[in-house]
Length: 290
Ligand code: C2E
Ligand code: MG
Ligand code: MG
Ligand code: MG
Image (cartoon, rainbow, N blue to C red):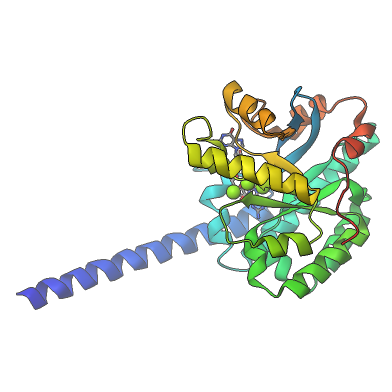
């Protein structure tokens, strides 16, 4: 009977796996169609200084599905990342962002915008050419673009990663390392790559006022970034108290619901400060010698 039960369990497990696979395939198919039908759109979350002044924004994709309504990226990006579908999503997002930035520029508004780039997109052999085409095609100034990479890209040979980053830097693009602290980055890597900014993952920021080890991790990351001469952004700031801790440790750049959620492009456009010219100086380019 044990054998019988075991067989049932295996069958149950296999059925579940099949269901998972089916659902994943369904999402993939719907997403592919959504890209064609222009059902994706980009929201922008302000990046601010302590005084609330906006010095940039992060582009965050959303999917408006006819049946399911608004779908957040955590529900489809990980699935897209399993295949080359993420490359289509990424191209669509970057193009849409660059068009929007060019439109803002025509209105006399300049905003530094950061875009999330998945490891698989970055790995494409013609990634730099794709980016160049989009930049040229939309007429955007690449100096206003920041690419957010995760530690996942370091699974590749560091030299190849570095070379590609340098080629993109030559276009004017800068880099930040996203979700910092959740991966396995060695400080050695940090030093070698032309990184402009570290973004401390929100999971650490969440508990700084209650968990002393998270407080230590965060204050150490801030101090380390300062030593290396790179900017540091605290992600996921939700409370006044968290902001106070972070400022006390020397962090000057923030993103989080305390200041603003991600908003539609139109609203973001209205929020862009007049003297947008100063943004580049306020978020200094530091690490280009590397
Ligand atoms: P991420 O790049 O780390 O982006 C920050 C996420 O944290 C966003 O979620 C943002 O809305 C959320 N967030 C910001 N402030 C707070 C806060 O104070 N509290 C809380 N609880 N959350 C906050 P979102 O938009 O759902 O995006 C989730 C992830 O999906 C992103 O994490 C990024 O990894 C990925 N993603 C989003 N858009 C794109 C894209 O265009 N391309 C790629 N490859 N990935 C994307
Ligand atoms: Mg990000
Ligand atoms: Mg992040
Ligand atoms: Mg994340």
